[in-house]
Amino acid sequence: MAATAIQDVRDVLAAYPELAEAAVLTHVQEPVGQVGVAYVVPSSPGLDLAALHRYLRERLPGSAVPAAVVVVDAIPVDSEGTPEAQALPAPDLRGLLPYRAPETPRQEVLCAVFAEVLGRTRCGIDDNFFIMGGESIDAMVIAGRVGPEFGLEISMNELFDAPTVAELDQLLDRLSSGG
Image (cartoon, rainbow, N blue to C red; front, top):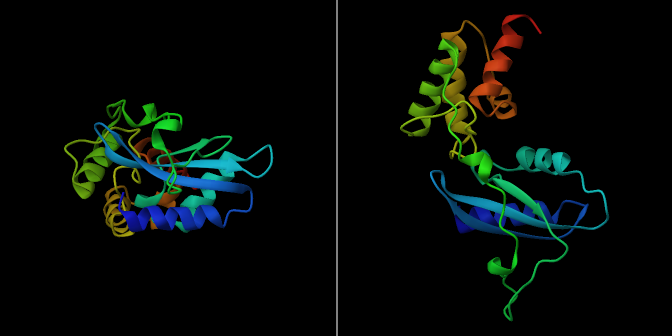
């Protein structure tokens, strides 16, 4: 995650009214590589993490959305005011690791499209478009290929709301059944 992207995430988090403090650090997670992690201190009890995730996805390009948000009581800093990464808890990035193979012919096609567009050797059905580095142009390409492949029309925003092959497969089910 580039320094400008980290600053963009910090700025977006700073504007979130339910946070007293936030820091964004990068972690290396194989096989994904470098991912951003947000550490946040809520301004009051009961922070709605799902709402915070939605807020971030609505305001940041997909590749800048943190792979994890970790709630902490305080963000320790060094004498220069820089967050001390070693003093913060390790993020739970386990969801980035497991590979789950496609289970249907449609999932095989979707995995192949994701992998090709995002420059990956393979893509599992739980791999997240954003965490794999997907951006708006990639979403447009994927939507432009997937829709016609299955005789449906999908938008870039729908792909953003269904960023894994499994979720996109479910969305295609709903669209094909008229729901």
